[in-house]
Image (cartoon, rainbow, N blue to C red; front, side, top):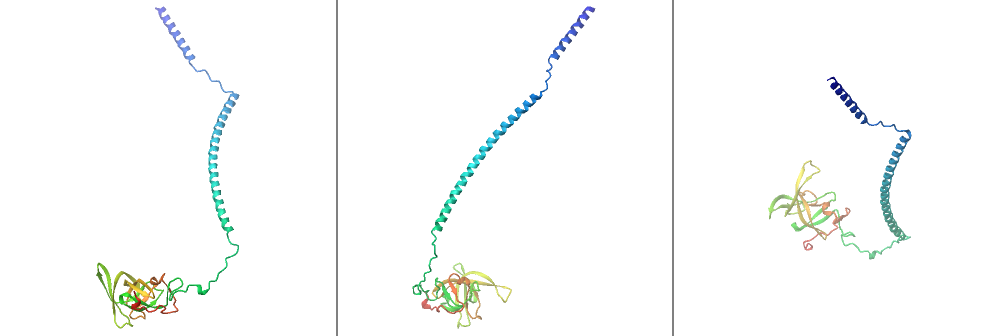
Amino acid sequence: MNDMKSKLKGITLLSLLTLGGCVSMEKAPPVAPLTLAELRNEISQSEQRLHTVMEQQKTQLQQQHSALQQQLIVQLNTDMNTMKESVKKVDHKLTNIPSAAPKTVAIPTEKCPAPSQGHTIDGKLLVGEAEWLWVDAASDAFQARVDTGATTSSISAQEITIFERNGKNWVRFFLSHQDLDDKIQIEAPLVRHVRVRQASADDLDRRPVVRLAVRIGDMTEKAEFTLKDRSDMTFPVLLGREFLKDIAVVDVAREYIQPKPKLKDVK
């Protein structure tokens, strides 16, 4: 019995020794430290790799820069050619400039076309500060004051009545003035209403505006007139800038430049 126990102890001890030897053989061998030469070599290789990468990037950047430079060179050449063409044109014009100023040629008066009676050289109507104005709707001519300070024209009107004709608004009024023996009834289409501030009053005066066919000299026009009682004024009609612009020139030093229209003269 004692021998058996002794054998078991021996086997157990042998097994532990055997396992212990296996464990010690599986351990990693210690790493030897780098020498100074090996460390320098490793740094040199890293520098070489970094240098290679930088050179590659530098080459790529140079290629891109070269392409951009090429585009700029092409654009500059195009601009230069355009500039040269412009300079050529300017030089050509400068070359063809006459060395001496052109001589003034006097045209004899008899060869200059004279303006027609009552007109300017450019064909505009010449009017004075007062003229005769033919009004078709009244079949008569009236004295009119030419006033470049007034925007719109006006005609003397009393007993103003607005009525409808063929679905449109018309105005019936009587032209009355101190120089007229009788009142003259006139009917005309209503254009609109305007508000006018009188110099002697603060309130706005609402006046109808009509369109009338009129004639002055040899010119016939359809013009707009505001209706206002002018019976106490010198002239029953006033001609403003809207009537005169682009068609007439005013000579304020003269009166009645245009002849008084007659019924036989009106077509």
